[in-house]
Amino acid sequence: MLTQSPLAPMTTDMTTELPVKSRELQTVLAHLPDPLIHTDSQGTVVWHNPSASQFFTGLESGRNALELIDLPEVRQAFEQAIGGDGQQAVDIKWGGLKRRYLNIRLVSFSADRTADTSELQVLWSVHDMTAQRQLDKTRTDFVAAASHELRTPLASLMGFVETLQGPAKDDEEAREQFLGIMAEQARRMSRLIDDLLSLSKIEMEEGDSPNTIVRLEDVVFPVADSLTLTAKERGIRFVFEGDWKAQVIGDKDQLGQVFSNLIENAIKYGHPDSTITIISRPYADDPHLHSVAICDQSPGIAPKHLSRLTERFYRVDKARSRQIGGTGLGLAIVKHILYRHGGRLLISSEQDVGSVFDVLLPHPLNETQAAL
Ligand code: ADP
Image 1 (cartoon, rainbow, N blue to C red):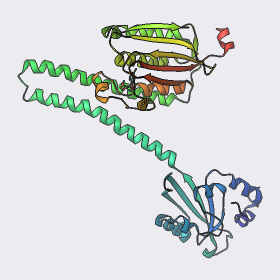
Image 2: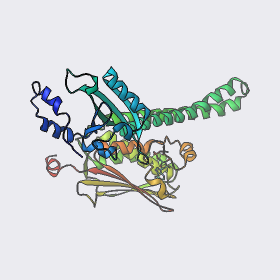
Image 3: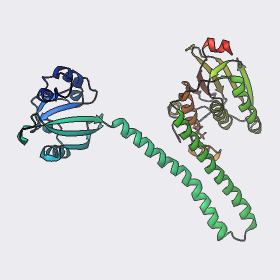
Image 4: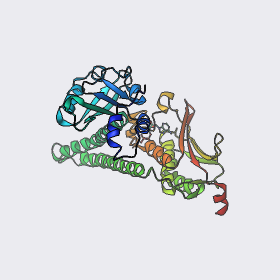
C-alpha cells in the first residue's frame, strides 16, 4: 500500500539542494526493489513501499513496525538509532517456511532541522541477504569438502610413513608395497589439486565467453587418440558417427577438457569389452546448438542421481570412484566450461543399457562460417 509520503517535509527542506519534487521522489522510492519503511520515533508506520509489504505481511500505515517485526535485536537497534547514534544495522532471520536473511538499516533523521528529538523519524531500509548467505554457505561447504577430500589420502600417507619409520623399518617387502600405495595416494592428491585449480580458473573466466570457431574433429579426435590406450586396457573401443567437420564456438583447450573428462568417465564406468559411441549432429530441439553425445554401455545410473551428478564431489559410489582414481570434480568442471560457452550438458541413462552425456554447444553464425 502506498500512502502519502511523509518524506514530503524533508523534500521541502531539500528542494533548495535537489531538483526532485516530492511526488517524483515518492514514485522513485515506491519502485525501489528493496523494502523501505518510514516510521515515527515510536515505530508507527507512516509510509512504506510495495516491496516492504511483500516481505512483511500485515505491514500498513498506522501499524507499529516494532510490534510486527517483534525481535529484541531490532528494538534495540531502533532505540539506539533514535537515541543519538543516528544509524544502526541489524541482521535478522525472517519468515517461517521460506526463511530469509535480512539486513535492516535504521537511519534516524529530523523532519525539521531545528526540531527536538521527539520529532525524529526513522527510515528502515531492508536488504535481502538470502542469496548472498547461500553463496557463502556453498563456498564454506566446498572448502570443507575439499579439505576432507585432501585429508583422506594425506592421513593414509602419514600412516604409511609412520609404519615405515617404525614397525616396518627393516621389512624390504613391506617397504616396496607401501611405497607403491604412497605414490598412488600422492598422485590422487595431485589430481585433486589440479582439478580444484582448473575449477577455480574456469569460474574466474565464466563471464568472458569464447568467440573462436573450432572444428569438432580437431577437438574430439586428439582427445580420443590420447585415451585409446586406456580404453584398450579395458577392451573398450570407440565408434564415431555423424558430422565431424561441423564447427562450434569454443575454446579449444577447454572443450578438450570437457571431452576428455566425459570420455574418461565412459571408459571408467563402462562395461569391459564394450563400445563407446560418439555422435556429432545438429541438436534437434534448438537450431542454434550442436550436439556431441558420448554413449557408453554400462550398468547405467539410477534416475535419482542424474540431477546431482554435476555437483562438486557428488559420486554415485564414493568408494568405487576413489578406487578408480576419480576426484568427483570432473562433471562439475564440464558444467562450468559449458556455462562459459553458452552450452549445456544433458545426461540420460537407462539401467543395464548405458548412459548418454550430451554436450550442447553453440553453432557459429552462418556468415562467419562462410568467411572461414
Ligand atoms: P569422478 O571423478 O568420481 O568420476 P565426476 O564428476 O567425473 O567424478 O563424476 C561424478 C560421478 O558421476 C561419478 O563418481 C560417477 O558416480 C558418475 N558418473 C560419471 N560418469 C558416468 C558414466 N559414464 N557412467 C556412470 N556413472 C558416471
